[in-house]
Structures are given as C-alpha cells and as structure tokens.
Image 1 (cartoon, rainbow, N blue to C red):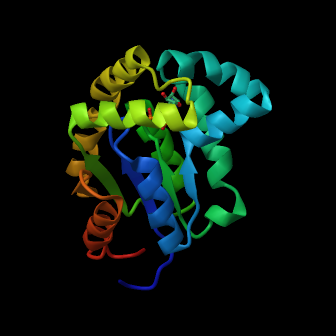
Image 2: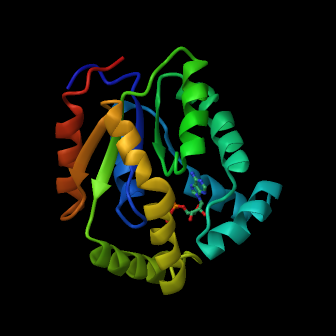
Length: 197
Ligand code: ADP
C-alpha cells in the first residue's frame, strides 16, 4: 500500500451491509475522517437540534431525509480542516441529486473521488443482522417494516448509483459476507491497486 494520504472514498451498500463498521477501519488506516450521514443525523436527534428534529420523522419511517438538508450537512462537514486530506463517506450519496452535489463540492476543492466501495450482501442475512443490532443498539429504525422500507428505497434510489460510478471507472465491488476482518482485508486488497491522488 502506498503513502496513506489524500484518499476520497465512498462506502456503499444496502442497509445492514456493514458499511459503518468497515468505514471506521478503512478511514483509520488512511488517516482520514469517516463521515457517516446516519451517525451525524442520530447525534443531532439525540441532542435535539433543529436538524435532528427535521431528520427524525424521516429516519423513523425509513425514508430519506430531503436532499437539501443532507447536502448542506455534508458540505459543512467536509469543509472542516480534518477533511482537507481526504474523507470516507458512509451513507452518502444515496440519490442522483446527491451525486451531482457531491461532484460540485469536491470539484470546488480541486480534488477528485478516488474510489467507491460497494459491499455486496445477501438480503435475508442482512435482515437478520439488523434485527440483531436492534436488540443491542435500540435503533428506532431497526424494526421489520422500517427495515423493509429502507431496503426498498435503497433498491430504487441508491442502487442505480452503482452503475454511475462503474461508468466512471471508480467502482470496487467487495463481498460483504463473512467475518468482519475478512471483509476489511478484501477492501484493503481491492484499494491497494487504487492510485492515490
Ligand atoms: P442504513 O444502514 O439504513 O443505511 P444509516 O445509519 O446509514 O442506516 O442511515 C439511517 C437513516 O438516516 C436513513 O434511513 C435516512 O433516513 C437517513 N440518511 C442517512 N444518510 C442519508 C442520505 N445520504 N440521504 C438521505 N437520508 C439519509
């Protein structure tokens, strides 16, 4: 692996694919912040901020928070000094409008995206994982109905982004099934061949 710096990465995958877990390891390795839109929304919900109040109703229903709200939040976050040297986005972009907005944000800094990692998983297994997680974390959106809605939205709104990034030559598909460490290793192996900007 080359000098760990200046990586601008996206982590994609359906709800429960393990994006957050892997994002943390990968970001740490490259010395860049992992920016999880879901985590930022949840932090705002628990602090009771205006953003949190706005986001909560969508999240609890398994719907996407409106693009304007999410875009502005990400724009502010990646302008922070710790993201100068790169970042790993977990859970963003999820819509074509977000893809375009992110392009504008990155372009304005004179940088480019380096890679988009997509975790592929078995849907049934993932529902199991999410229901298990609900028992541990108590996330209010990890209930059967809401999980199904999140999966459906992923298929309709987010899965099409895979082809967009494939066409740009940025896509890296990684098998997300199996042990956490094995998946991490697969991601590192795949990223090893990505030239760093
Ligand atoms: P999941 O595993 O379901 O993808 P996340 O923690 O990433 O969980 O996201 C939880 C919720 O936060 C989503 O269901 C959605 O309501 C909201 N959210 C997160 N990221 C975005 C985004 N990029 N655009 C719109 N809504 C988002």
